[in-house]
Image 1 (tube, rainbow, N blue to C red):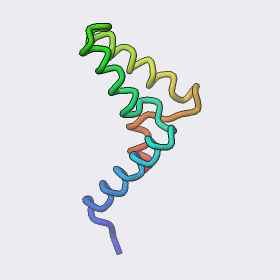
Image 2: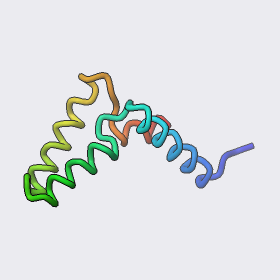
Image 3: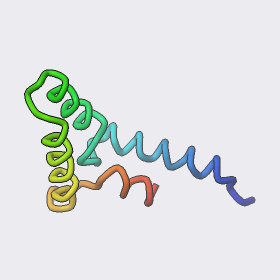
Amino acid sequence: MKRTPYEAAREKRAAVKTADASGEIADSMEVRMALMKRVRLGEITLEDAQAELKRIKRNAKKNGKVTRAQAWRHG
């Protein structure tokens, strides 16, 4: 039986959530929330946070992790 697009997306969301919780994702929601907290506190600018997130994503493979987008594609 063929999966519907909805079922496929739901399974991918679950896979990303599981990978995020287990620490396999470099740019996890926890990392993203921490960056945004620093922006709200005025420690860094939004542009600095975006640059930091880009750096984290770029170095993900080097650190043995994947990005959220990669986890979604392979979920």
